[in-house]
Image: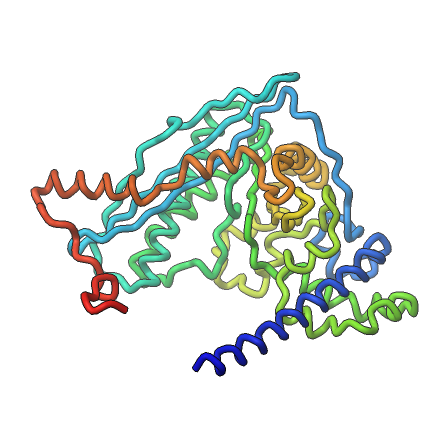
Length: 387
């Protein structure tokens, strides 16, 4: 058994080494030619991009005088007898930057708000409950953003997550969760309308993106780019087609983006164009107003996927995008290995609902209902014979 496992692991190590070696070779080539990549040669691609340059350098701005909010939500789930309990919390951390001193912090609704308790009174399949829980958390975050837009004059709002639910997260029409989905979509539309009337720049920060849009575009343009003999010679030892088949955007971008560089920006709608049937029709125009790019904020961390809501009534989309990124850069320089903006870090810490807090709430629920025993755990968690 051990020898068989060792052989399997040895093969896996070989495959991992091959992938990492190919990825590094690929990155070394793209690093040399990235300034020469002109998307203007590909009209079908630039139809949905802000610019024709593949890479843009972002200059950090001074934060003095800016008010920037970070917003995040927390989620915890427990079962109480036959009822599923969802605990959600949304919080905004608002930093006001002075000329020299560190930022002054405000919090909405409170520095440590109590979680919202939502019972799910249906016997649901696991995936349905997952969708409802995720939508409940998203709705909580959106309500906080709407309140911040009303009550604070912020220059920038950073949301921990995407500015729009991906179409694949949409529950079936017959699902119990569809009503919650419609409620969440209504909150999104309310947010977009309010953001369009405001000078506040709305930004989504995705920490661990699994998107492959940049990879897909590289697959389209490289066969043409490599017609250049010098470029072909540099890439001839790299099986880039094989590599692109299973790489994510951040995997490849991390090999050639330098700190402070961003990729070209593309419309969110172009990323999901092949799934427009699952994107609600009244959201398609809004999705076309969201611009997506990747920014390398820390030397030893992966690039962040960043989504910016483009309010064309106020600024040109490119100006609005670069203005947001130039503020995000200095907010993300606290650690060379963790390039997340500090308002998001603070909001994440305060929004998280830990096991101790969850158990306190469940204990209180048991006391109020007169139940004197803990909810029975699943059998796999209480096997008296071990394993």
